[in-house]
Amino acid sequence: MSAAAAASAVAAGQPLLVASFAEWREAARDLLVHAVPPELVTWSQPGAGDLFSGAPAPMPDAATQHPSISLDQTRPAPHVPRSLMDMLQTAACCRMPDRWAFLYRVIWRWTQGEHDVQSAADADGGRLHSMVKAVHREEHDMHAYIRFRERPEAAGPPRFVAWFEPRHDVLPQVAEHFVSRMGKVSWMIATPDASVLWDGATLHNTGPLMSSAADLDDAGEALWLTYYRSIFNPARLNTQVMQSHIPARFWKNLPEGAIVPNMITDAALGARRTGQAQAVGRKSGATIPIAPADAQPERQQPSKLDECRRCELWQYATQAVPGEGPKHSPIMLVGEQPGDQEDLAGHAFVGPAGKLLDKVFDAAGVERRGLYLTNAVKHFKWEPRGKRRLHKTPAQREVEACHYWLDKELAAVKPKVIVALGSTALKSVLGTGSVTLKDTLGKPIPHDGRWVVTVYHPSYILRVPDENAKQQAFKVMVDGLKLAQELLERPPEEPPA
Ligand code: URA
Image 1 (spheres, protein in one colour):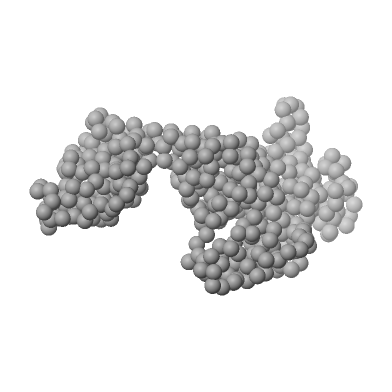
Image 2 (cartoon, helix red, strand yellow):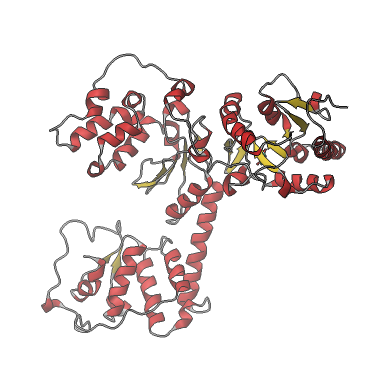
């Protein structure tokens, strides 16, 4: 039965099988335009006994039609306010055996002019409010208590896997939440009824892939392959595009590389052998590991920061965070890398470290809008700690890879003075690790035709527990900013006074 033919089905004495809110809404609309009252409708959902398994329901027959349902007469589809539809949609996630019947009773009453049905004081309204509350609570709990487990990189995607047993059907909206929180890193959330998989760009829904938390331990290649099979769509197969996205020589090292050729051939009903099947699936021989750095010269240099693949950090970040400030600011501040809030906002120094910097600027009499603010590394590097993303110091190779972008900024902005915030920035700016932050505080360094001034990183001040040390570090930062301004008047060839 199609949901649009709901009234005919009810007239013929058939129950309505509904699996989602969208199906319920379509069915309810058809029932409302045919003025079918709730007491005549039997609703059911998949898994509710054997009622709907086996032979398809018979087609409606005029002789068996319910006498009080007139299929010839319709009335205009009623207008239902957005606020009520939103409540109904949320309540539909509540696992109650009679959820569809209940929602229909509510909407029916509303269309009969009983607008109290939306109020918590009404018996049905009260139940509706409780269902909405229960669903929101479950969403909150799933956000708060889900635990992603990191899998070894060598095991292939997904990088993080979590198991959760939600009490209500909140997986789709919770998945959207994690899409917005976890950037491009791949992850999977498995529940007893369904799984969602984020591959870094697209969210895929599949049936259950795990049966308990114990499966997390071997949520390895087999799991990924099961998933890959489940989303493989032969109708959308374009072997040329597949090969150009992933050059054939890499396929044999990918977990799905081993099964893709077979699936492709199966899709072609065994009649044709594809490029991958010949080039990869049947190829024997040793695996030659290729370091990303060696593969780099084959690729074009990225033209936009967001396209950067010079190191691996892009995979885990929400977005690249560019530097910001006047095109030709005389002073450039270089931090380490964006933090959690910068990663989400796409702007540098908007989180707690940025707020502290604002205080330093005030104390030094400098205006933030006159400065160019950037970072040595443009993607947020983090590690999961429960549901939080904790900052992780970038590796030397990541700082070096990102120097490409800092060079571009220096060439464009042409600052006279660089203020390096902390030792990662200092190493990046000088291109060497042989100078320490401690040795250079208060001692400007002439470098590449400009001055480099070093100060603490603002996060150091936020972290240091001792109040005296905090104040001293703050003063070092303020003095550094004042020094940077003084140096604008002094050419860097002259040794500092
Ligand atoms: N820390 C940094 O180094 N840079 C930012 O943008 C934010 C925090």
